[in-house]
Length: 123
Image (tube, rainbow, N blue to C red; front, side):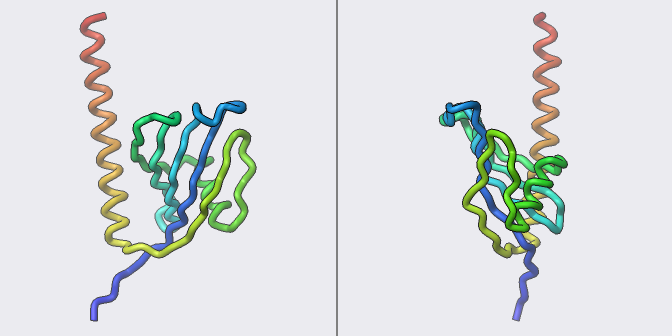
């Protein structure tokens, strides 16, 4: 019999908005992985923005995620937290996803830097 090692994951939605216009904020689906101290994020800016996928270990986001994991959603001005769920997920798949997301972010930074350098040539 083959046993799968699992890691705990806390899923939640995080929406930010400006004033009363909920259509101009950022809409995020977050997956907090306490064992790795990271949050995987699918985020869309505005109601019709294209979603992008990233990973973060920013202190303020980790503090929010840790509080949510403890059942105490923090108060953050102009931010709503909801649809919190906890589940176990295959740790090998999760670690592969984390590594792939980190590589994607590194490549994206190289592409952006390359385009900026290229655009400087026409300034």
